[in-house]
Amino acid sequence: MDLNHPLLASAVDLLPPFPSSHPQIQRLDRSLYCQICKELFSGPVSIPCGHSFCSRCIRGSLEVMKKCPSCNEPASEGSIRRNRALEEIVDSWEEARPIIHGLTSNNSRKRSIMNTGPKNAFAAESTKRPRKESTSRSVSPVKQSSDKKEEIDGDADDMIALDPYTNMAESSEDVKASCPLCDITMPIRDISRHIDLGCQPIKPRPKSQGRENLKADWKKVFSGAGLVKGKDVELKKITKPNYSLATPAELRSVLQSYNLSTFGDKPALAHRVQEWILLYNSNLDTSHPKSLGALRAKLNEAEASRRRDKEKGREEMASELKTSDGLARYAQDTKGEFERLRREIMERDKKRVGSGAEAPIEIE
Amino acid sequence: MSQFTTVQTSPHKPSVGSADSGGLAVNKRLRKELMTLMTSPTSGISAFPESENNLFKWLGTLTGPEGTVYAGLTFRLSLSFPSEYPYKPPVIRFETPCYHPNVALKTGDICLDILQDKWSAVYSVHTILVSLQSLLGDPNNSSPLNVEASQSWADQTAFKERVLTNYRPL
Ligand SMILES: [Zn+2]
Ligand SMILES: [Zn+2]
Ligand SMILES: [Zn+2]
Image (cartoon, rainbow over all chains, first blue to last red; front, side, top):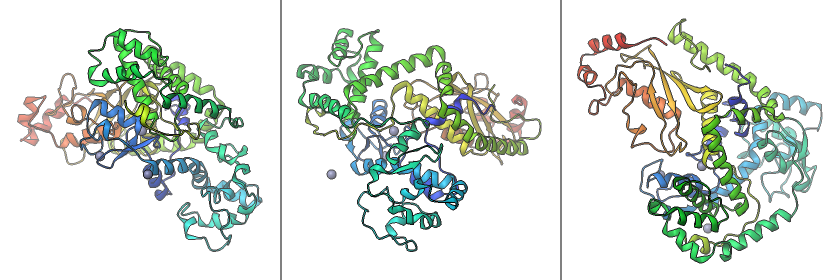
């Protein structure tokens, strides 16, 4: 198997799994994944049985069948409720995850850094960062307060050793730290985004401008200005069960009212309307709604991606991904791990199947 | 669509969420599954995309469970994912001839409820392969695709002979 295989290299936009040496953290991490998209919940909602999914994910599933995909209990779109507590947990975890991941997977390197001096502000600050209101806690290098323990278990030694540094910075806004993957120093709040982007440099966030635009966009939505009331009713009329009854002209007028492309035949139009409603509705189930422009971009992106997949396979995307710096680095970082796994699998299979058998995982 | 006007959410920060939609999401979910299969492999099953240019077609292998007439035999499978995955199930076929009550010997078509009407979006390549593995040793003789096989299941010695006659090593 080629370990520079683009399919593996492109895994960089996926969150790296925790090592099996930390089963508790693996479990915590897994419990925050949506069972449909297998990623951290985004805009989590609950349905009557008590199961939770991303709003977008369960809405998509309910289009196909009106029951919970996990337990088969009846469910409908109308019974979807936001799960705000879960959203808050996932948000916090998203921030804390790269830090804890660095601690669990990089122990040996971290120790050596620790021994050479206080350079590792990253690990040090991680004990402080997760709790916003813990600015005045007592700093005792020996006794870990019990509420700290639950955050990072199994690494108590490190925490104690590093604890004296937690007083270095007062405001978490200004705290800088080094990325556990590439060692570049940056404000700590940028790290998870930086890692998500494959260790790309993060431009300083614009303080308010983008936010203002967003606000304006959403004011429009909630006041109904972006919608046109009549169209809203029309849209409701032709939702799910009636796509077959809607004329292309009706679909086009719906799309037009949201400034969406009206190109394509009837199935394409219906698909676009359906997709838009899903995006739009699920966007209302999150504390971080995207602007209408961003939703539109997402819709277009998804359509373009589907076209690409159909026409040319993944070739384009794969080579695109391969060129990025961070990807190359990630591939390098994970190469050893994958190579080890591959050998393990091959050995195991040889034993079981006999020497004539080929490796279970292969490409051609 | 009453939500459009009644929900009073005040957006307080730009999204950092990661959920995609449509084609992008399928892509990402498939790569995610691949990564999970690679990093926490299960004995007796494996799957990998056929070529690096097409993430929607995979090849898998399945080893017959110990204690069944399929023990020690490895079967090749083809998996083909629709663009609506995971809302719609992948199409899965045996590429290695498999003499089994719920497998069509010639085409490799499989009759398994979770691949048809019992499919759910929470299932994955991993759950499918594990289910297929247990189907090998525990056929559903009430809905056979291979009627002859379902009738001869009772006599395991004769059945095994037929399995081996039809089998072709990878
Ligand atoms: Zn999801
Ligand atoms: Zn449920
Ligand atoms: Zn409440």
